[in-house]
Length: 155
Image (cartoon, rainbow, N blue to C red; front, top):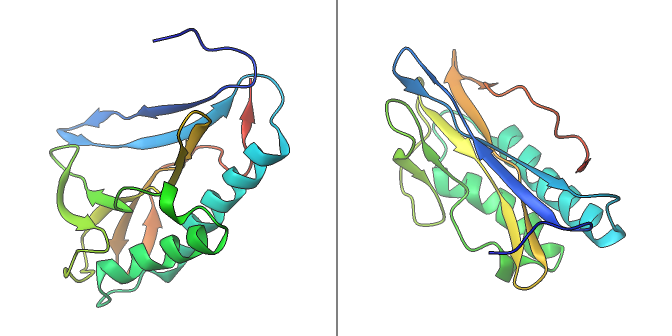
């Protein structure tokens, strides 16, 4: 471990429990002013996340949602640095079925609640992840998390 210093990115992965149900959210912040590269990578992750959320439809395969985000990150040149699935179910536990990944054969169904959390993690440089919780309600996607994400937070 080392102390966080000016120019470092760091991830805040947090949540809450309400009436037995959990939430899971991640935001990325930078200490000081963000560099062009940090902003570019952040905006790539944000674009991937929003495209994935906008693509979600009842009846589609969860692996197609993962592919939507993964393709954007790959096209930006960072595909090898997105090493996990796009998301996971949440409810009574922080990690539940379904898995939102390229391996998943599950289908989006009414009532599902899951995370959408693309990320880019570059060794010896840092990482960016943006995670939100979504629910499928009345055949529509409802974003459950309400936290600023339109730009990289500088502290």
